[in-house]
Image 1 (cartoon, helix red, strand yellow):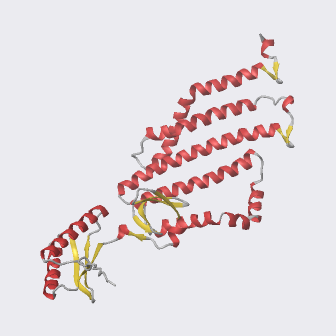
Image 2 (image 1 turned 180 degrees about the vertical axis):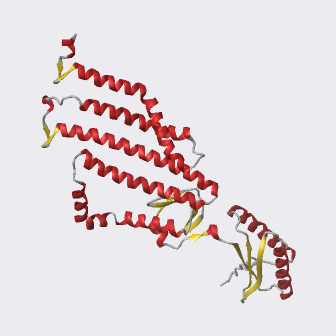
Image 3 (image 1 turned 60 degrees about the vertical axis):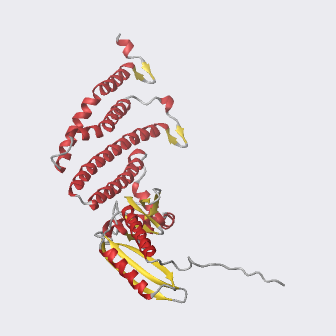
Length: 364
């Protein structure tokens, strides 16, 4: 039996394969228990953010990356104890196959570790966002989402540098030097992305608009549903989903309609020039009375704007509170119909409505 365990397979005794397999099997059997224990330790650190943190949600979020990281770590460490077979000692494009295998193993561990960090950031942002929601300040939610995405980008860059440095032995300092030498070309190729990133910081700190605000920019009107590192997403009045680069949101004139204090309605009436002055005066008085009696109208002006040879122009302007657009359109329709009833009552006509075309037949 002792001789059986000492048999060599790829220059390694069967005894070593058995212990490696046993370690991996134990890891598979106890991965859930160990992962929950580690998640519990991490939860104690995360609980400093607040006492109302949901432990089950935290553990559930970290369980998958912890389990996979644990199995990958045990497998890689166990396989590293085996002797690398000489038969596999060859080069691929002048790179030893052994170095490639080690680089891939380290890369797997680094990627899984970065995945774990991203999950932790997701959970922390979820907790902070819940606290921000309780404050009732939309700008706090916007800040949480912004910095969550920004931290993810930073960690992603650090992860890439770790893979290059620790996984494949690339000197990171040389990478930075190379980026410095190619900085001009890189800046030109990524100019728009960098400008959009800078614009996202301007939007965040200047706060010309926030999520859920109704804005109008470049003939696009809609509700802001998200502000990212590169673009702002707007749900238009036609329910389409428009993505606008942040640079345009900063450089263009943005009308934040949510911050308006009033909604204004305008009506321009062109009345027949044959309308009597007393009738016109009484009609204007009727409209003023009509608008004054409406509780939802805050202010109104009605006056005779212009007199021409073909018509009299009456300007009607009134203001309401910043109510939703659907309600505002219903009010406009109601007012327009009542004004039409006033015109019918006083037998007034819109200019050009009584026009007749007469054709005379000329005989030779």
